[in-house]
Length: 331
Ligand code: TXA
Ligand code: MG
Image (tube, rainbow, N blue to C red; front, top):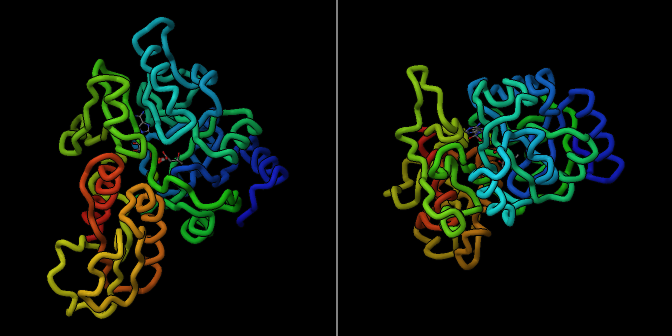
């Protein structure tokens, strides 16, 4: 059920979390499916509800940087400590940092890795909830594994409502794409998943930063992935999805939906449904509305969804990262 994020309902949600139950809650990126990160039993419920493979680790959410040492292991005066200090201006915000983990965090959260991904979300409801629960919250996006991430409480209810009973509604997510995942485990920082905190911004602060290539993401014979969110098929709608520039004719399809980034050149084909994400090709606006558009089109009984593309710079890199995988995922 959906509960408006009143003080009273945030308190009720916190009580549920303390009792090792799950709560879906808003963040500025996408909605999360939260559990007490210190409790292996609570966290195991996340994997069950999402149908998530246990080798895919979770992000731990904290309310302030002074709680970092509850989840991570950051030696005093180290280079790592300096890097984290330099990144503090991005927090609260859409940046998750992979750090050596604190042994208080159970194996199931990190999929047995010696590292943990941590972030401080920039959403008043999320911060209140974490503080009221009094524990760090492990939270993946609140979608069934491999499906599109939800950016509204209504979408959480639609795609997971039969498996969870508490969704806190804090309005639509402003960023609309999952956080940037940055690993600080090696001497050269590496972006494992691009997001609204851009590669360009990170390079300005940290100097050299690598972009993880998906092609080389498998570590070991068991194909365990460094950042399993980097699997090629992910975020896919059930309806066939293709890029507009790859479309020659839609004649063989009866009902086609178009997700356009701007109003340019829409008249060429006879679409059954059109969603224009921005009047002036504003990439932040496009990012914030993209998943909602994909989910809505996917529920509309179409034969094909056609989507625009953009250049892979700034936040455009993360928009195209998600779209390429969504296109790749359902063919
Ligand atoms: O914006 C977000 O990050 C949202 C909201 C709810 O905070 N959460 C989210 O979680 O997107 P999830 O589980 O859907 O994606 C977590 C990503 C995955 O790609 C996972 O592989 C990676 O973070 N990750 C988590 N822990 C890691 C670790 N120790 N090392 C490498 N990658 C890690
Ligand atoms: Mg996810």
